[in-house]
Length: 348
Ligand code: HEC
Ligand code: HEC
Image (cartoon, rainbow, N blue to C red):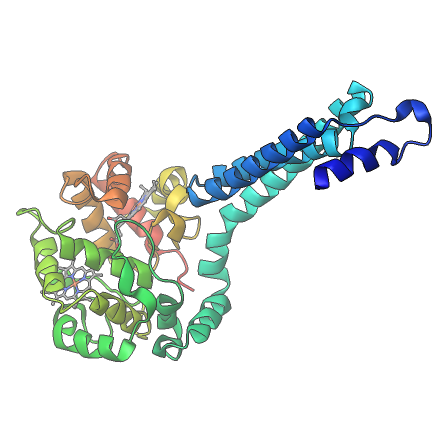
């Protein structure tokens, strides 16, 4: 067995002088081997549980313990001066500490990178998936990166068909959202074409399942909920999102009167954490882009959150996150200020 071989060969290796020779007892070697196996199983197990940033830390902690065991017993450091063992374990811990900081950092920035600064990646993925979404340019992102999250419809994201989305859109949505999804204010219907595909799907899913637009006092929300519920199937949401995000309508024109300077103060203090410094949203936090939305719609939604018409169903996890944020704005003029600031952010 390997253990036996190690114990006899180990006694001669690397030790020129006779006084340093020592044989590690077989039970110790087998014991250490057993611990390493258990730790490996733990690493695999821990990787299956989603601990967020803590995953990296747990994996590296186990790695430190494992490499310490290997060095101490298999490499005989344990029988050397204790000071050497302390140095080695400390060194290993520091290396892992630095690696974990680097990994956590990378992880933090990755979503933003892919979502906003590397459209080529999304495109390449969509092409690789070989779906019709790939040809539709922006719409292809639905096909490449299916919407994630417990409150978003799970399965049928594998491919999105913008052609079918076009049919559905022209039949049901044009009347209120306009032919280019540019929005129609007199109908309270917002522009959709500059929103992200995953967010369109998430909101359609909420309307469909009654998490949004269920309150009797939410008149506009109820109109939209009826439309979402009339969709033939879940796949329609993905097809529609693929079509809508590929539309080329004009960006919304600013209409709300507010003080963007005061608005910026509010925005930088609170909103920036989730919607990002440029208002482009953060897919990992499921917070949407706010640039490209009608400012009057931003105002209307903030009022709905504040009135408890949106984001108060305990099953609406992301809505419940946004709802208290809207409460941090002191009054109606603060709402208009923030909307005016967002409307001034560059879209491209
Ligand atoms: C009867 C008019 C009407 C029709 C038809 C309609 N919508 Fe809407 N839609 C609205 C209104 C009004 C809102 C705003 C709801 C609110 O204030 O909460 C809305 C909101 C939305 C939103 C949420 C946007 C956001 O940022 O919060 C999405 C997505 C959406 N509609 C997609 C669609 C799609 C796709 C269709 C076609 C299947 C469609 N709508 C058909 C009226 C309509
Ligand atoms: C804790 C993170 C977080 C913070 C901070 C935050 N938001 Fe949000 N916001 C979200 C999430 C998540 C959603 C999506 C909610 C949903 O699905 O109903 C959202 C949705 C919105 C919407 C609705 C957009 C739409 O099209 O439906 C508006 C408007 C908005 N946020 C504005 C703001 C403003 C203004 C602030 C600062 C006062 C702010 N948010 C702060 C997370 C946040």
